[in-house]
Image 1: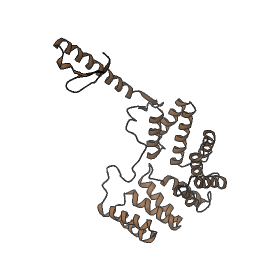
Image 2: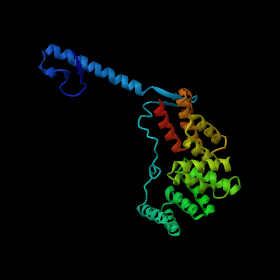
Image 3: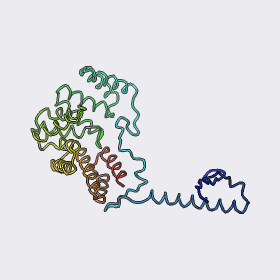
Image 4: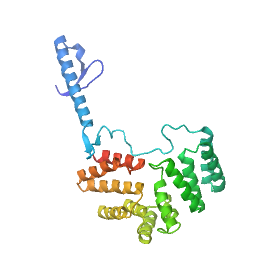
Length: 295
């Protein structure tokens, strides 16, 4: 018969190019045969799908493994605003929202006061502390910015938005490794929508401060050729980057390796990154998404 058989459901149907005939109109013996064949076909497909989902993509020397099924629902996104198993106090939440609105309007001192109130109500919630650090940064108070980025990192040691990068940069500014104001200059890359301007800022930073790993990461994202991008990634990895920057550099390297036909090397790089104790939550989720994509 020229056609398709639909699996599952009540009342099996056999579709031909002429018409749809209900099996229930056939003779009893034939009905049993049709149902058996269709059920058997569906069962085999289901078993094949389950088998495919359970295919191991990566296994490390310690026995950690990842299957297709493990990566099925990964999106590469992290919602830092929602803390697992943590109820946000309504008053603290309201104060935080008001502070963000004030900060966006340039009323930094009023925003700081609101954030400090929110922190007093719920000191274990990282978000207002993170925003407090950022508000001090915008005021040019780098000492307090560093103080509260450190506090954010204590509250969320596996990463919280750009805390790891901020700490890496501001600590470098404090010790003299990096020039003062570098982190604010670096943020200009994120704040501009013009790709040419982004590229210009990234190139300037890598030229003027060659040991600043985050600028190499941004440059690698903005360059066009794979060879140029890989060179920028390798430069960034040599600069002792923070955990978030190192993670993104390795993820981008894995993607380039896969593009070059080195799929197994790419999978190993991503798999080891996912199970590394040094990886941040953001890195792990992005690495999982990349591994899912190339697998």
